[in-house]
Image 1 (tube, rainbow, N blue to C red):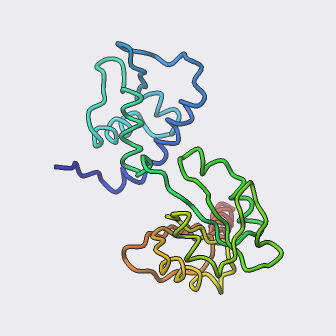
Image 2: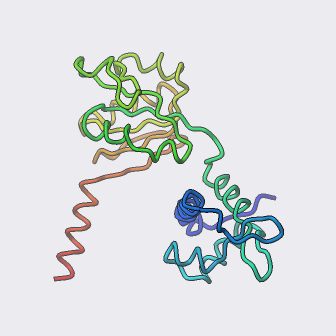
Length: 217
């Protein structure tokens, strides 16, 4: 039977994965080893994440048994299990909709590739952008979405379009078989239950910061 992981623990898993990846990328060969396996302690993870050592041990216990008594956790095994929990063992293909400033910034970012996501296409309706390449990724005409989505096997669409176009674009993504949407617009999208949407509302984030700052005065 598959072990049930609590919602709160699942929400913390991306932070664990990011910390483990950073430790791995920054490693100079000095990682503690026990019987030939790289080891990481709950105290080290606690320092990296800002969680208490007790919270770290509780979270990891929900994932399974990776501990080496008196030493810590098996580093590679822990990373692989968290990868599986987060679905990062798959290679996901991403298209960015809106090749303007924000879309271009995202296309040039290295986080996609580092986490195993591949940006395979950008889409726009601006004839001045269609056909150009941004970080070696071609900008396609939005009207060609269906054929390009099938050819590029697009899994996730990133929306950086104007708000009044967001729902229209989302509907087109869904009709093309794209089941994941990362929404950078302020529009609340209406989608079927089998479509995953994550909202990244930059305006609301700024307003939240303003509210917290004002509340501290």
